[in-house]
Length: 313
Image (tube, rainbow, N blue to C red):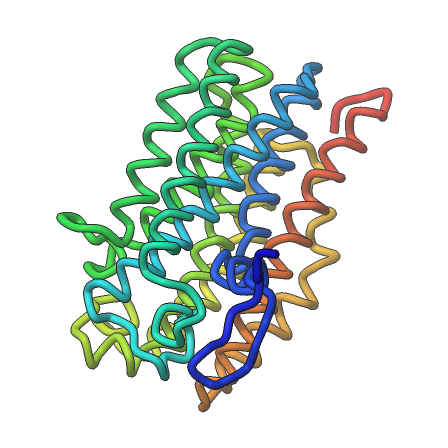
């Protein structure tokens, strides 16, 4: 009989799957859901929806993000950026819960699955969709890996915006309607801002650890106070972006329903601006991830409800 339990350095024994799940960082995976449902809602608003294309896109993006998290775990270990006491990292390698080879293998396996689903999409909607996938794979891998190491050069925020805002939202639209879409671009802006906010909270929390290893995230470059203010700017900017795009006609006016989630954003910002302890930022990360999901789902619902009205608003 195969033993599927693992004994960590602390002596505790857990089923092996729990360590795989922990390293996948499930609370961050909501960042995949929001751009996909919003991009799909825009396509539905314009009259087209293909269930198989949606499902292939969803799981391809999900495997891509899980693979990115595994690569991040592996390269932070390999480059000496994390240690056993790192608050933000899963530290499964340091704690002997998983080997470095297992984490790397998991990352490669997830990327292979994402690529295979991308090939399925190419058969369904055409080869251009492979360019979306290739861009996503390159950003995901070099986010942590040499020679670019985007996350260590203060470029992680920009790359997250491109990958989890622009590419995923427009890509989710493109698998249904193969053309450029200004509404999809407009919708990607607030979604991308909130994805950046999750990363910024992570980097603000990890300021001391990143400073010690010269990992030049934006909070390391400009300070913790900058990270707090940047967080507030991104969250407030998300609501402002939806409002502007709805008023100029790029998004349906019913997109403004996202303002029902604003009290959650306000509470989030107020807590972050008052934060003095790293654990406060841990709470901030989880709250921002939940807000990202809620914002995206409500925005998508507003766009979908607009379809049912006898006039376009």
